[in-house]
Image (spheres, helix red, strand yellow):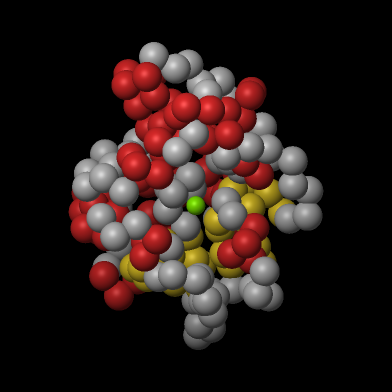
Length: 176
Ligand SMILES: [Mg+2]
């Protein structure tokens, strides 16, 4: 029997809706209404008033920030189905934020309990040997020679160099 193909899946802005958390947080804490239209091709902090520009870094470094991120629509069902057909790995550059490690681990255990610990890769640079890689950051594809699927997020909408998926239903169409 053939070996299953390996898929690496990123978390932030792919499985977890970090942008939606920011939108709600800045509405509540700063009375700032972020629009997705203004975000095209930009990072969230780029659309903030100058005095708030550095505040996103403070929030992502706080314990708890990554614990209650909204789950991306349809991701639980599609990742579960992928998990049955492929060798699925969750690959997150969690080392960037010290306090994210436990939050991210617990978030995965709550929302994706079928992913075993051996299939969770918390790392710095994403140097992985897989066949398919789903991520929203093109920097993670630079040294990758498999099939890269760029998961749409406001910051990458102006990039045309990769096969793109806008949502999990499109991931299902392509891979299931
Ligand atoms: Mg990401």
